[in-house]
Length: 272
Ligand code: KIV
Image (cartoon, rainbow, N blue to C red; front, side, top):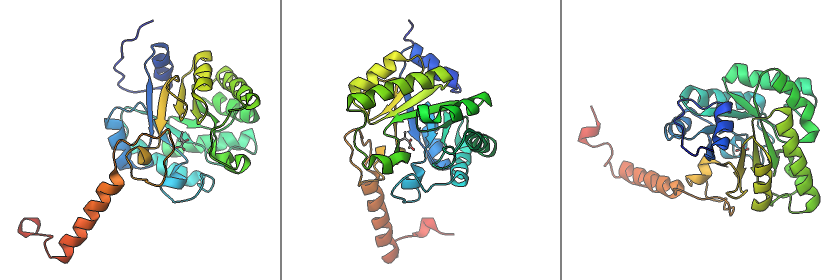
């Protein structure tokens, strides 16, 4: 098996499966707007997720439930305009696919047609099997999402680690196999024990991308605003902060206020 890193000009769903076969880990980050997507894509991140976490990060909601299909399309179309290399996956928001497969297909088609996204992501396993099949039959690639599925937060009652008990772990393994069998090209596994996540990844040929799922999976995803430290009240164990932009930006804004008040900005060179 080759472990050489291939230089992908454009990432497709096929590239991701190939990366897993070549034991190359997959990098994935979120973006919800043009400017952030441009930076994330230029940095060489393989997959950009237009996550429904936009509901929390961009709109300040407590959960992902309120974001609408129209709002997801707006975010995704802004991201698409920036991206040259990454695969862009767009979350189907809560309420846009759970009632029946026809509604799920209509929502997925709207995302693909109106935003130009490359694939959709849905939360759940067996319960939404028919919806996923319907979307796949229309030629739309689907990424699954198992483990902690934030759209079901009111069922779980807490954002704690999932599948610690045998029964839930067993269902998760069955769901993962089912998602691969029906044709999903990848699965996000959120907040589950690392040992279980590795077992799932090892049992599949499609990539498993983890968040809070250890390093035995095929790739990692983080919410960009968390990993650059723009959000600062969220401290889960799995989050590595690469920057402290909250502090950096606060310092810059405070300096700006000082400069404006002191008539130090603009100076001679900064005016016409
Ligand atoms: O919406 C999102 O950002 C996600 C990631 C946490 C995987 O689904």
